[in-house]
Image 1 (spheres, rainbow, N blue to C red):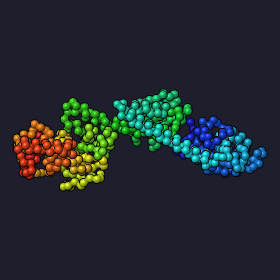
Image 2: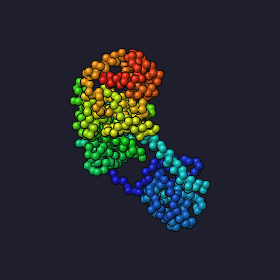
Image 3: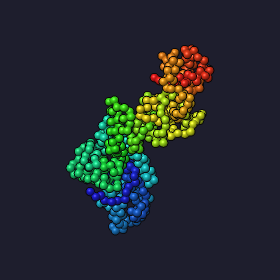
Image 4: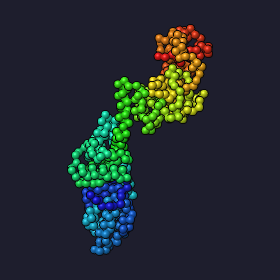
Length: 535
């Protein structure tokens, strides 16, 4: 259905003329025209021009004192009221306000007749009310309407986001959208067929028109299109370029915030259908099922992809992260994963774990030393205030520091070594928190320990540490204390215990081991043993 083309109104929520007339401080009175509740105003404009058409955008309450109207206008033919009102209507004016002072004592009868003939609301402005006061009242009402509209949009966004997180996200989003717009919401597939729908079923004419509008946006550069059929407002939104999915909306009326609400739904559905289209969600689900059914990690890793559409990733980083303030939630954890370039995020307790594909340049690293936690490289972050880490090595590839987070990063590993890398990242995070560094990486480099066969090193470690082997907390505390160069405070922070608890445990270790922990040679030997102690 074609609509008359008029100058477009400003993109602000309109206000009802009835709301303006209800202001007792203004004392406005409607003389003629349609009911005030059916008239909406987008602004107020004052003009004493005999032809105000060039100065109107559409939707205004035009205010005039009749300066351009001769005092003898009451006589027939003295002023073309019909032409004057016709030009206001043609410009899209919403209503005409006439001030009865100081030029005219009453509203000219010819103006009343012309407004009645053209259906233009005519409002009398009393002498005590200034035009600036009327304009200010209009803008105040528009500001309130804008605030109300923003609240409505915010509530709708929250509801749509909650619907997208349900087990049936697509039908849930469509149901929530249809309820908000009091109409019909339809998801069309690449072939134009209805995949899912919610809301009141429209008539055949509207249903066919909406499907045709959906086909239109898939074949044209424009991503949105609107139409009106049988008094129903139609809109179609293409869900991403070239994918073929379209959101169709049919509603009996359209308010200023409806387009924004429908656009939010379109974005959510675009993400949901994007996963369906690319298969990434199905691939990750398949990887999980295969792991639960006993498949090896290296067998399912290719299903996880590399974040760039590259399934040839052979090495991965494990990242442990804690927020600098508060506890992590699902939203902040997902944002961290996005910043690191991976959707593989686990937000459990107070630590977020992220599995990040290693870039090609990082895939040439050596194997994993799962028992080693001493070779770590702190890296200064952007967040302040934080002390620059001592002994920083050359910057390596891999995940970077993130504002507001403390990170521990493992060495790049193969899928078979993920558990070892998880332990590396946990120890790196503990050291990062103790040294107040934004990021600490686990670093691999050759050392004297590599000269001892692993089996012999482990046997020696078990024999040396046997007196404290039955108390895991003692071995853990000794490991942290030695890695932090005997600092009571830093060890307490890393283990989340009181410094006196650290002192008591270290004293207990010294007694059970019968060793002088102030001796650097003893510390070196114990550190060697702790690095090679498995299980």
